[in-house]
Amino acid sequence: MSMQKLLLLFSLTLLVSRSLCVARCYLRPASKYGCLSNRNLYVFGAVWKNEDCFRCRCKTNAMICCSLVLIPKSYDRVNCVGLFHKKSCSIRVVKKTNPEISCSVYNGFG
Image 1 (cartoon, helix red, strand yellow):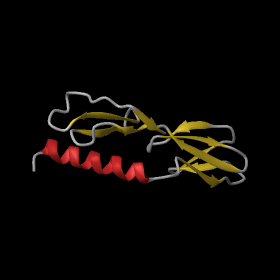
Image 2: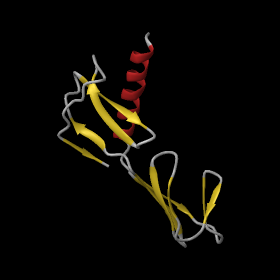
Image 3: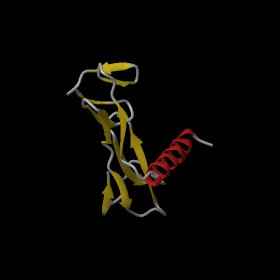
């Protein structure tokens, strides 16, 4: 299997698995010192973007993190595929046969 086809397959799998996820936010309890995320301690009131494309806020009672990724829902799924870009926290919908060509997306959620 070519590297391009493998990347497209991986991206499609990621897109489908993220689309099945109902919760776009999650909460974790805070400690008396702040919020722990990826081995970093954040003070109360801190806001940051984590490595999984979630915007997090540390409050006195909980850390609240919500996804920054807008997931495309209505597009030509036969001829197009969504490619996840971790650096920009976005999904780009492109032609399966030519990833250089973008597809039209009619709506999404995030």
